[in-house]
Length: 204
Image 1 (tube, rainbow, N blue to C red):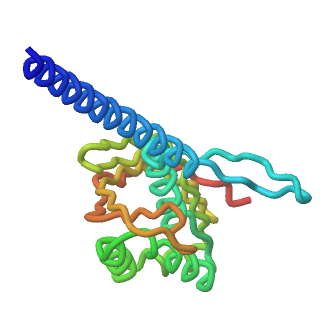
Image 2 (cartoon, helix red, strand yellow):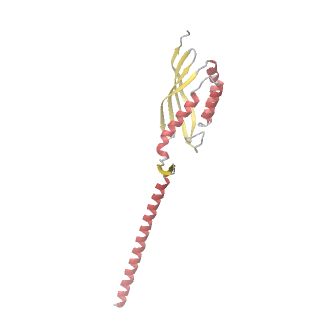
Image 3 (cartoon, rainbow, N blue to C red):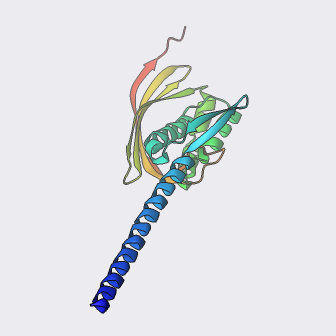
């Protein structure tokens, strides 16, 4: 009888020890999870000093703003590439900035336009080119975009409005001063560039 009581007490002590260990592991796991969430949330918090007064600023998830950044990047590139004035230095400056935003497909289009006398015609006719963005569609899963806009060419003798449609793909790269969005346009090509309107100006 005494032996049975001892065995029962041993089993009870074993169950209590095992239960205590299991409870401890659960508590430790919950504490670790809670601590991880605290650290994660803390990393999303930035304190900015304003006259030695800390102000809490919240980081936003980069992927939440990525579609807007993609559209802004595409818009900036097209504006740099197509909004031009009859000034050699200005056109060179615009193209240099634009080439930071696109791969070799942009340089290829630039060289094609140069060989076809596009930039010389801007100088000879004193043309001012202004690009108006109509819309930019972005397919996030494919990283594909399509740009719709109108290119206004204001010459001495006439004003021409062209429909401009281009497409390409978007590649994430590290951000830099020359590429603040951290995006590179790849496989860029023009789908449509046709005259919509050609209005002659009065010669007097």
